[in-house]
Length: 254
Ligand code: CIR
Image 1 (tube, helix red, strand yellow):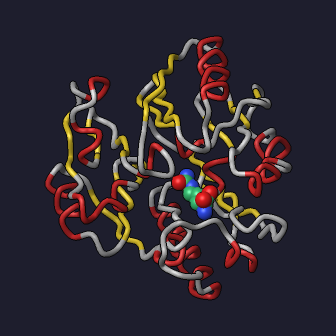
Image 2: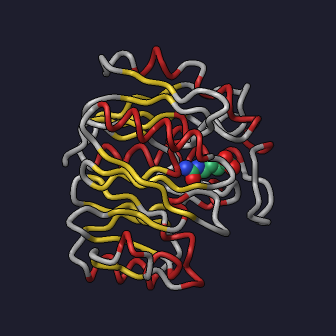
């Protein structure tokens, strides 16, 4: 799997009103803009052409584009976010994604699904059932993916926003995971790269074309990823962490 492109959206000024359970306070907007620029640079350093969308002040969380679509090699699926304040974020996605995809499908109410809950492992997709992704949304996604020759299954999650808040697939059968996922039957055959309990946020790291983007400030996780043989790129994403967002949430890769 090689990615060639990514879509990002510049944070909007109203990001200070974004959803948060972190307890870390409000993000500093100008700092967020600088961190986002470095994030885009990191994607480019990984060889991606980056499509940069303008800020959308109608939606405070709109910089977290990952949740609005699932991009697979065969088709794109526009999601339906479970958070009421985020449902409208999909407004522009069909026309943006339509520039790159011939096949686009949609998650429809009463289903809800945010793609932070979807982890791609080759042609199989793990879907976390969370407060944002319900069984109806997951069921719709499973049948869409099966129509295109792929498979998917659900994973129960607890005490985390999205599936990928606690686990990230780093390709080559390597799974970066917090303790909760170490014993789950579906992941037993994979090599686990552990994320210590006190560094849980770093479980959301992002594999791109052989390199791994890792949030700054998590030395044990960083060392575990490096020891597994990956090049790492460390990014300060403190202002996005305040809104419970991590490095994967800020882009759609395809
Ligand atoms: C939210 O609560 O929806 C945003 N503040 C953070 C979304 C993070 N997205 C992700 O994990 N994929």
